[in-house]
Amino acid sequence: MVNLNVDIAGVTLKNPVMPASGTYEYTGMHNSIFPPDKLGAVVTKTIFIEPREGNKPPRICETPCGMLNSIGIPTEGVDSFIKNNLPLLAGYGVPVIVSIAGDTIEDFCEIANIIEGTGKADLLELNLSCPNLNHGIEWARNKKQLYRIIKKIKESTHIPIIAKLSPSVDDISEMALIAESAGANAVALINTYKGMKIDIGKRRPFLGNTAGGLSGPAVHPLAVYAIFSTFKKISIPIVGIGGIASWKDAIEMILAGSAAVGVGMYNFVNPAVMGEVIEGIEHYLAENNFDCPADLIGLAHF
Ligand SMILES: Cc1cc2nc3c(=O)[nH]c(=O)nc-3n(C[C@H](O)[C@H](O)[C@H](O)COP(=O)(O)O)c2cc1C
Image (cartoon, rainbow, N blue to C red; front, side):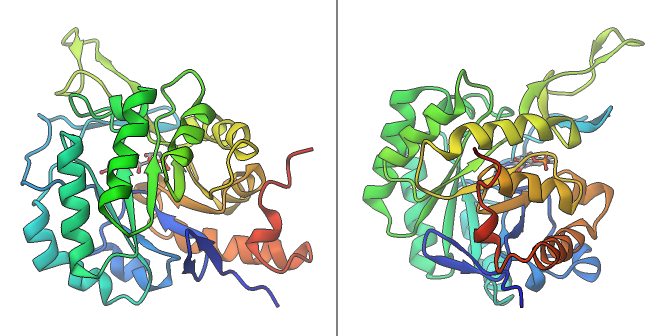
């Protein structure tokens, strides 16, 4: 009998599959195709304290094997989120991971406190790596800043935190080690890679914000390497994200060292993909005589 439970920072997930932040509409149309209560956890789009409009359109474009987005985190703001969405999320009966960001360390600490005060979030994911905000990616690229922000947030909240890191650094494993030493309870690898498309008719950048973040199958091998190279350096769990399009991609990520996985852009291609990934992991474990996902973590290392 396979048991799909996994543990992330003391929180039990009934399976290792969650949406990547910003790619799953938990309040609307996806519910009929893939219900949130089947997930290991629900993860919100990143929220800020104050409402924001996001970037100028066009905000997305397709690329071979992926997509570029420069959404720029439009958000209703934390008050409206708490009033309108958090109760709904908490009602699904699965752990709730709230993704947060801010313009300053103080903002991050304040929003963490506000969310903690609701008692409705199980984990906080710190979006330290958004390439579509003015300085959004810098938290995850500057070693001192990364240490400082995580340390400060840890001092001001009791909810376990997942630090979401950027692949656009020399060595992501070093940044993960810094995140761990500052007190992060888990890391999420990876956010998108900065990229761009040029409209050759207009001879201008296609996206309204010039550049965007690349995600989807194109980044999967890069994400697997990021996870593989980090796994042996840290002892906190890794949530593996990047280009998962099938259960096989998710298994690769677990074998590289992920304790759980986040499915992002592929939710737009196949809204049933997360269910297929959960089933595929279960069958793979059963067929290969493993008891649980934890038995697979990091097995590709030699
Ligand atoms: C449309 C879109 C919106 C996203 N919004 C967020 C966000 O709000 N916060 C965040 O941390 N990551 C965000 N991401 C990044 C994803 O969570 C994920 O890290 C990245 O897309 C890589 O996974 P994928 O290749 O499976 O999409 C977004 C990605 C896409 C495609």
